[in-house]
Image: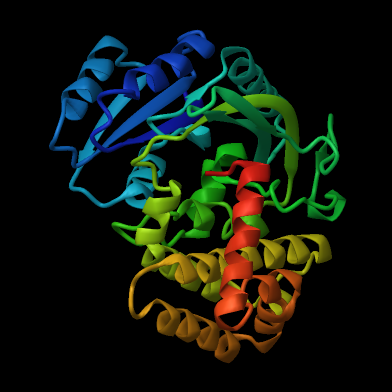
Length: 344
């Protein structure tokens, strides 16, 4: 029997928390035979992650598959799961996160309905929840005022996304054939590739459905997390790498035919460039500002219209204020946004 959905779980030294992730999917989907869970051990060496992955497969061989690979980073692990996927749909769940039982059950029932009716839906969007460990608070990101509910739609039907409301990996359940056709270039040993995952395939998604359910629970606040402010600053070169891949994926104004999707993608790319600007300013790397300038110069040479929008729009101007005072104002604005949205 072909699986309805494959859940990929990239794991790297995840023994302390991966069981919660796997259990939440199994329990939420009722141990259903049309669900597949692929645990990708990304070359773990410091704990029992490889053994735990094999134990889960031994306990539920019709549902769980353990895959072991040399360490390649988050993107390589995600794509390894995609390559092994037997489901019509694919959803990535990071090993320190989990799913809500009622919501994931609703998602599974929705996907089953599409398949049984022979209705092709390329992308299903659901809500996600920031679970903040430092103060035990929650922040739900939903799309109730942005996307139609109760029907299949296309990109021409979307509304305006707020800056804190973009479609991150946590919100996305793709058809597997769409992901494979997108031929995602996920650089090895690179963090923040989820931005590529939530950008490059979109023009290939012609039919979309929004399920207003809080499926994904995104744990945030661990000191070693990639989105931790200190960690992200130390890895600014990873963001430069991701920005270049997104930059060269499309000449957005020339290649994206649907106006609302074009606007969304350009806005999202602008945010990525803004992150590069802010964290380059925060970095203590002596070459950070030179590398940032190279990135902007490359964008200008690649596509002048994209450059003008990203660099000289409101966000670009606010995150690239010149001089010492400008740097201080940029970082103050970032800190204010951080407190308001609590995105890391």
